Amino acid sequence: MYIFITKIYRYQFLYMTLVQLQYVLAVAEHKNFTIAADKSFVTQPTLSMQIQKLEKELNIDIFDRTSHPIKITQIGEKIVAQAKTILMEANRMKHLVNEEKGLLEGDFIIGVIPTVLPSLVPLFYKTFQKNNPKSNLIIKELQTDKIIKGIKDGSLDFGIVVSPLFEDQIIEKPLYYEPLVAYVPNGHRLSDKDKINEDDLNTSDLLILQEGHCFRNNVLALCDTSNLKNRPIKLDSGSFEALVKLANDGYGMTLLPALVADDLPQEYKKFVKNFESPVPTREVSLIFHQSQLRDSFEKELINTIQSILRGKIFLEKDQKLDSNMVSLPKK
Image 1 (cartoon, rainbow, N blue to C red):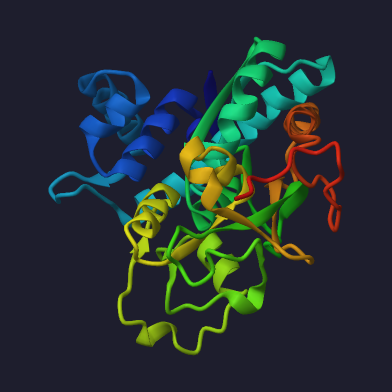
Image 2: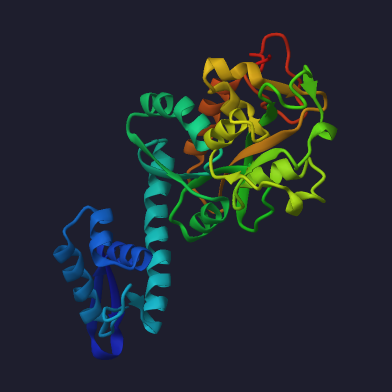
């Protein structure tokens, strides 16, 4: 596809391709022509040649190739920003047509936070693709701030995050409310309790995720954090698997989302304890830009996820687990 820009006073036409703009954004993101070409599934000479053609048409340098990593020139920054806008609008045109035809086809790029992706995506991915064979889900594991940025600049179509976010231009649609459970190995001061409550939590023996994970904030919101900086041993990890291993090695206890606990090996589930009512939960939502045009996909994805989780987890705020729901693992 070509974009034509008329320069009336010279009676000339400037044209560029959407592919050229995509290559520009790839280099701007990766600061390296070889990596950008690899991510764009073309050879490095092909990518470089297309960008050079665009620079020649515009009579400017978009990138400073003498620096390592490659830097974007001052005018190049403006070109990159405009390229994002042009590509986003071009995609919106395709989305508008597909939406009018009721088609769920093409790429759908979804950013998912690390504390949700491993337990949720495997549950719905195959089902969604089977029911919508012309769609292509592209899942990216990203922190919340990068998902928000991606949705606002058009590089992501949707995100799955812990909410609320209170972000301008971002719409949030709650998917489910996930209970938190405690992982308490034998020998811990709470190991004899059938259920625990928030007052039992003490940061002196609580293993938590590293800073940057929203689940860390969810956990700390339940605790008295006055002695957090004075913990005798600080063991912050980047994964739930590591936290469970550290707990099993005698370094304390940890909290887990219910879906993560449900994926634990059977021999570990006996160490999982429920909270007394009211059970702390986290709200997990599908988010998207307020101007997005892919309503059919939004509804289909929400329906798919909720139909799979129905009976296993809270789908509404303040919902109670009933006798038909899968109980969380007990000692």
